[in-house]
View 1 (cartoon, rainbow, N blue to C red):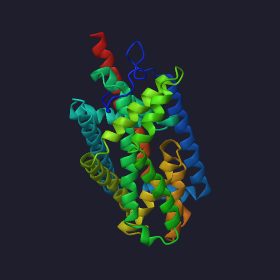
View 2: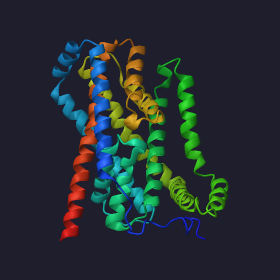
View 3: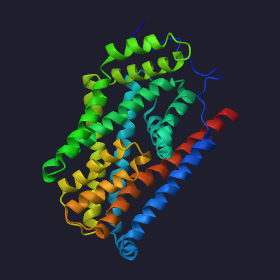
View 4: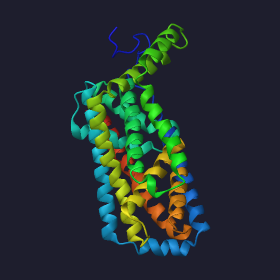
Length: 336
């Protein structure tokens, strides 16, 4: 058997050839996530001087906001190009524009349990290119690892400016490094999954798991790893620098390296907390790190809210728009 192939018996797609996807349940999850976000941000604002927060927001320079949005969008396009690169390296012949659109559609369901939003990528690719869902999920797994590696690299560049945070940083780094290293342990997970695949009630899931892991392993080869990591680091640095611009726009005292650590390490904490969109953990991390810099809660809150609006909530809105367009085009194509 080709080592790049999954267990044959476990890689059967559903009989209709299309993965099951409950749009109504996903929409309900998005609405619930949005409601949680509104309540969380509302409570955080009320705990501060909401009049000061609102005044700070209204006084934020529109020119700076435009630059921030442009930077964030450019980072997303870079990550979409990375998704395209991974598809090509996995043997999928897709167009760049289509790949970026599929990547952005995944943002729509960032707030769903287990990040089911990422499954949208596989659904569109299955529909339009007959790409196996397991291959897409393997790519998604590597994307997440590259994101974490990139954020880790960015945070490490400013670690010495935040004495006392080293132990927590090392703990987070160990989790990320272990996650990447585990993909190379094929000699361990392949025999285990091959054995469990002999059990009828585990055959399907064992085959899927092996296919996902092998796709991820192939994308961790040195050349592909380096390209993916460079793209990821540049992409995430646009958001890190955006926080610096936002802090300057609110007249908060911080240099580029300080803002970089505040954003990168808080994003890492949010990601490892496993909450949808890192909500709660990322915001708390930013407020805490700004407090370490001597910025009080009332002053830091507008900056935290604005960077999260530009990097999380704007992503969800854009993802919903792109996903609806792709669903409409797919339905229109089917009817015609």
